[in-house]
Length: 200
Image 1 (tube, rainbow, N blue to C red):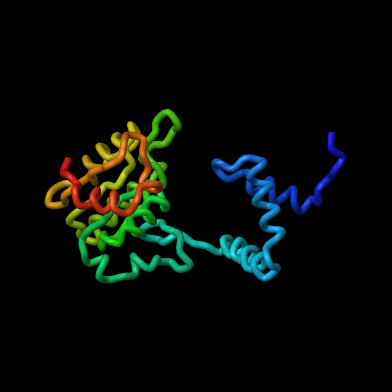
Image 2 (cartoon, rainbow, N blue to C red):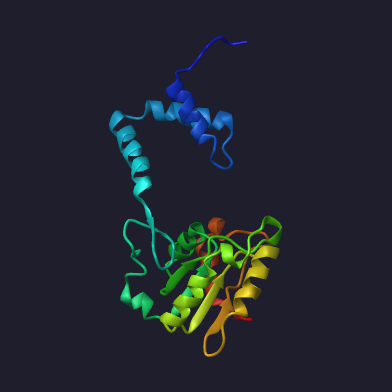
């Protein structure tokens, strides 16, 4: 058995990195040792960026991360005036859609999907605020970009029942299997999914 004891600073960083989904102890140690070999100014910049996370806010309208009360999309009058709102599960999905550079409306981050088995009901998601925004901004088209799963389908059905004409509710078409995730889909597939959205 090895008697080598690494400095506590390395162990703490390794333990922190190992908390990332999909990162095991060995991968965390490899990443930690790479950080050690970074130039000191790169490590300082990384450390400062981590510290700045404590000052992050959520946009008061769509709930994406922002340094200000409003994110750059919600502060863009042209996008607000589009009368389009795209509803997503999480910030990763929002970023995936933005990467395809086709959608020109605003977003709303639910913060998850309905899942009664895990105790996640409508009151645990940003659904009430979505209803208020649709009314306040006179949204004409609600686009549901919810990942295809049993919970995602149930969430879409629930949201569809909340809006009445003249508001149109559509769900994007999917070129990926049940259980797929927008976060990992290429920009072209997302573009086609937006083009091929359908009414309920």
